[in-house]
Length: 124
Image 1 (spheres, rainbow, N blue to C red):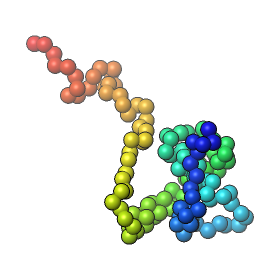
Image 2: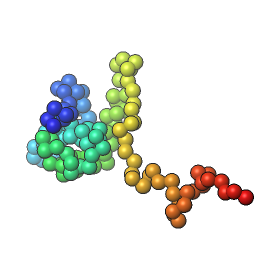
Image 3: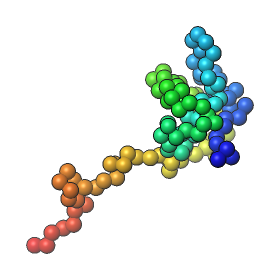
Image 4: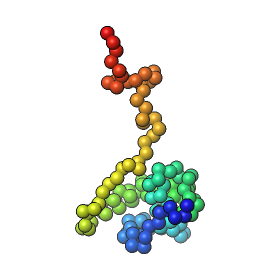
């Protein structure tokens, strides 16, 4: 399982370090480990509690994800990386790994029948 884990490289962390908020008070958990764990959870569509132990506490990852999301850290990071002057000829966005809520795929109406235009036409 250790071969399947995702870890950010030194070069990636160096590029992302400017976007991390400064630590308040004591030393915080390693940013590389936490951010790598957050990416792993999002890439694999996992619940936080299924985060592999190599990344550390799922609660730490969830709390950091919520805090940084509210602060706009991820939005600013993605905007800045998107505006960079690097070669973008091979940049792609792939949403095939995104998951929907299990009720999002239901085509049934509230009473259990097919809804709207998807219902079979009735014979006259």
